[in-house]
Length: 417
Image 1: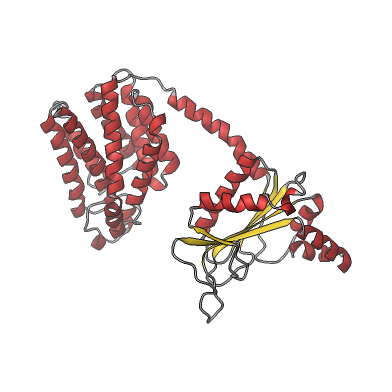
Image 2 (image 1 turned 180 degrees about the vertical axis):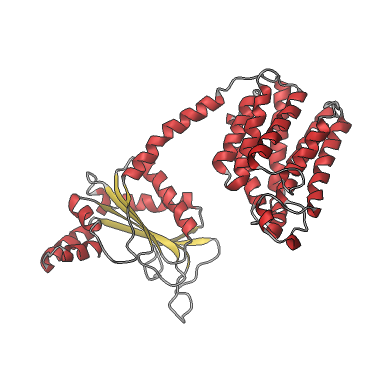
């Protein structure tokens, strides 16, 4: 339709437009997927779709599709669709031409979901090493309650690109992402890999095998504790924040667990830098930046030795970094309150091989976090809320106490052996 309109504006005859439109139609392939049946106004859904299923190949007006599949995440849906589209005769017959792709919102898919789906299409095309000229995303053809998408692929030539980019006043026609966006994304990957390599090769003190095994168990225990407390932290954060602290920390924990084989457990400096990178790359918002800062600063404590005192010193310089750059201070109702109480206790010089000392560190962390319930927030997201809703402990402070407590429990379990 866009090409035909542009040809009309360019003064082409009706026969020329019809012939070229028919030619293009033969070079197009479209497939739709929906998670929910659409409907007509004042009418029930056009078909029934059982829970946990998705309709593959449904019509643009909600007609039932060619199959029903188990519900999949975006990374599973896109390959299913693209394999069919790219393998269709219309697309394979013109493999010497680059692709034009169109991602259509059937009506009820959120913008964040559309962005995720676009990202998965980019990944698919990069893996396939296909050349793309233009990529369109928007709501082009929709139905009421249409919780789904369609993808169209067309083989391009200079003429069709000219007509697609022909200026129009149609409000719903978006600006295309150029094919160069795919290429520039691919070119950035080697730089990122090299940066990660340099991070991994960081020098510093090394741990004995049994020490490295304990560090690994402590980190994994902290991760499992955060995952287990996800809903608890979300509820706390929902009272005076945006309700995602538990989700954020659980996501970071899962990413750390997934990276288990690539983490340098015997080199604390490299390990903490790797954990900082995970928070920086995978955790959104201020929390990711704060933890990345904490961990990267702490890594500097292990350049020459890796004794228990180095871990205490690492936490201290990490706390100093986040108070300096994040501006939060003890008493501001943040994770700083938990960390400050623990650092203050550890600076007293108690033996870190004593089970009672380790137990008290966990208890102090929990007590400090719980005490934030009576504080007025002066930093963080909660500082923008009314004092009346600041009646529960700060979620960030509690999250810090949870991973500290889990580490203390694991250490004490090892000491008792």
